[in-house]
Image: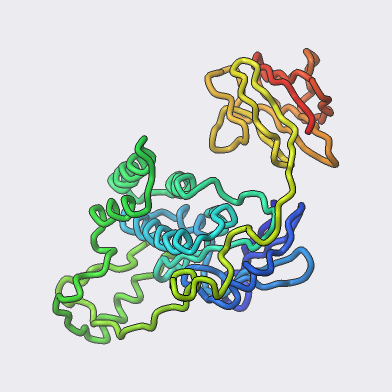
Length: 359
């Protein structure tokens, strides 16, 4: 997976991306984002072999804002903006796994909570996300809430999107509309009145995130906001226009066949379930959100029990100081020591056994 770093350049958010595996630049996708400056997306910039940069807007890491503390309105504003961006990506046939959904690499403008995402225009890129629902789950987990009432609203929303019937963007947006109607534009037919410049300045000064005030669009009931001048439609991906659908390539992998890939595997003997070791650092344990192979229904396995490292086609296992130890064919693996796995080895975590098979 590509290595990433969030920094700043010329007063703008700047995310550096360095290729570390088999990734190569997808020139069609890269040119797509250069030619179409799309609202909500940082623009890629080629920095040399194996290097990309993303910039174009002012912003700070979303995770920093979440940890400062959010209230109900700010939380739902962030989620609404994220869903708006994803709606466009879905309609434009983006290759969703190439969208960077780590809250540490989503940029947010502290003045208005606008979000900016990165699309990695790479071939053979390991997935940078595990879906919009898990992204929202991480946002909800990282956030510090200003009050228990704010947390109650967020908890209700997460229960809604994680329900058995599944998640859809329109249903999630409708839920937010009910919970925070102030985030949606008022009826265009409603009369609007101008507001004195002094009042506008005062509200602007209260809109910044730093200082944990989080009052982005504080309602001024006595003086409604002045009507904003009409803005031109942003230039978006051509696939939104059916008449120009074939002018630019869609963001799908159709130009180059992808070679077949085989992975080493671990088969859980108690259930027969097989899992590919498809990452160079493959974590095993029972803490679902932080491991790649979650061992369920076994309390003797530690949260971060063991890690399998893949280098030069070989796999090595290390025990992460687990309570009930890790074994290979019955022999204990010393903590923080890498032991090479061979085809057919039985890897045991506490009393849970896995059969290892090479690729």
